[in-house]
Each structure stands twice: as C-alpha cells, then as structure tokens.
Image (cartoon, rainbow, N blue to C red; front, side, top):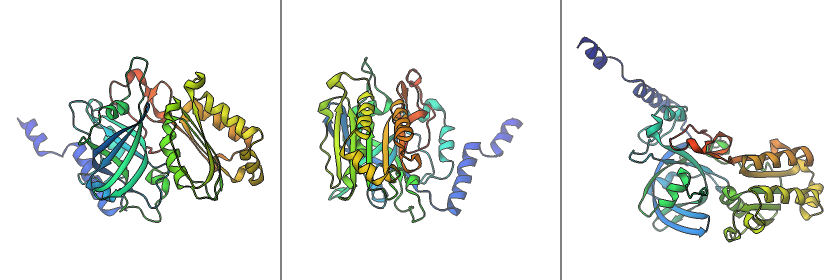
Amino acid sequence: MAAASAVKGGSPPLGLQRKARALKEAESSPAHPLRVFDVAVRRVAELTPNFRRITFAGADLDSFGVPGASLDLRIKLLLPVPMHPVSRPGLPGGQLYEGWYQDWLRIDPSERGWLRSYTVRALRATAQGRELDIDFVMHSDSAGHGAPGSDWARAAAPGMRAVIIGPDANAITRATLPSETGIRWDPQGARHVLLAGDETAVPAIGAILEALPADVTGMAFVEVPDSRDFQDIRTESDVSVTWLARTTVNAPRGRLLCDTVRRAVSGPSPFQATAAAASTTEMYAWVAAEAGTVKELRQYLVHHLGVDPRRSELRAYWSQGKAGSGSNGIPIQQEARPQQLSPSLSG
C-alpha cells in the first residue's frame, strides 16, 4: 500500500511531464509554422485509373496555407490503426512545438498509426468554405494489397474525418523559410527549369507549372503507369510537358524517365540550347521520384551536365520495396505495424 501511495502522490508520468514542458515552452517561443488540422472528406473523384482526388473541407482550413502559390507544398496525413483513434501529436489546441515528432514516436507503435506525406494539389475558397485537394496514387502489389495511404484513400467517402499536419497561416512570418512550411521549390531566380518525376510527383509538378509565369522556359517530364493517367496541366510559362507511359513500351519503373531526360539534356533540343545560353548554373532542376531513379538522374545531371545541386531539388519521394517516405521507408513486409518515419514534410 505504501508503494502504491507513493506512485499515486509522486511525479506525473513522463508523457504528461513532456506535454506540460512543451506547453510552457510553446507559450514563450515563436509560434510553430506547422499545426494539426481537423478536416472531413467533402468529395471523392476518380481522376484516372491510378489517381484518386480527395477534397477535404472544414473550419480548420481557414488558417491553413502559405503566402502565395502552394507549389510543391507537402503535408502529413495521420492514418489510424484499425480499432484505435488517431494519435494526435502536439498540444490539445492543435499547436505543434519543437520535438513534437519525437514525442509522437513515443506512443506505442501498435496504436499510434502512420504519418504519410502528400502534396497539396489545390487550395481554394468556395461559398461553402475552403477546400483542399489531395491527389492519391493508388498503389497496390500484384496481389492487390496496398499501402496504408492507398488503402485509406480507397475507402474514403464524403463525411469521413481526417487529421492532417500542414502550414499554419497565422504563424508564418517573413522570417519563416518556405522549407519550414513544406515547400522545397526554390529556383533562386533561375528562369530556365527542368522538372522530372514519376506518378508520385504529378500533383507537385502540376501545381508548380500552374504557378509559373510566362517568362520561364524549360521542359517537364512525367512518367506514369498508363497513358490513361495523362492529365491536362495548363501553364502560362514556356515549359513544355512530356508524358511518358510505362505500359506503352512495358518499361521498368523509372527507365523511361531517366532515358528521356538524358536525351533531352544531351542532344540537340530547345532545352539544351536555352540551357547553354543561360549556362547550367542558371538552370534549376527539380526532380522527385523513386529513390533509385532520383539517384541516377542526380548523378547524370550533376556530374555530366554540371547542374549545381545547391541550386536544385533532387528528392526521393519513395523507395522501391519500401513503405513510407523517400530513403526513410521501411521494408513492405514490415508494414503490418506502424513504423518510424522521417518528420520531413518533403521526403
């Protein structure tokens, strides 16, 4: 009985201590640029055989967003373990703080669920309130089994509740770096661009192209599973868009993208002519795809073409045979339970 009394009257559990300390620090620190948003599915649309658009809505979205275009803005979707509620990170009001991710990881892995990264395809105001579009790639293996994100998107229906982590418009200041909000696009004044990506990069490439001004030139290459996945992307820029379908030539994943980019930047083409006139130091390359594809393109662009990696964004969005984000993914066979993922909003 004495031991029980000591525990009851002793210090609070470590989790509560950390929450109390985080709350105290949050009150005295600048607002974190990210926060937790409660949303609900408003609409679901089948865009193509491999893309499903889910439109979210909710009063929380009134404070969601960044100044200007969303570009390649990445958010996190919290996916619950079946039979468990969503394990919300941060403080009760939705505020996040430095170290929130580490605290979230301390939740029992069998209960906390998953965090998955997605690109904002569009954010708009409507008469019914703000809406957020996220385009999901419907991954599945030969047996028809999907990853947690694809499974969630496949089951999504109007009215379903969801929890996302994204930029808090009320906390973003002039001192906030775009990378702190989830944006990696940073051409640093370059007016000639190369965009290359697989299906996971389609939403980002689409949003970027729609935001580019008329005086930007270059080429965009997009590899998707099927020609029926080609999408109509409009841009005021002078950037041409080339769609590549793997099923057309039964090509391995990433092969068409790598070979096409190589030919475009090494042989006679408007892209090469413009790049030569501007010099590769004034060319901005944005590449997002499977890790092996990005590695091959990075090696070619940096070591053979002379693209400055410090002025480019070359990012693995996922890894073949792994679930999760980029090089931080874990083997698919272990995906039956939640895993530790990178806190990065861009990988």
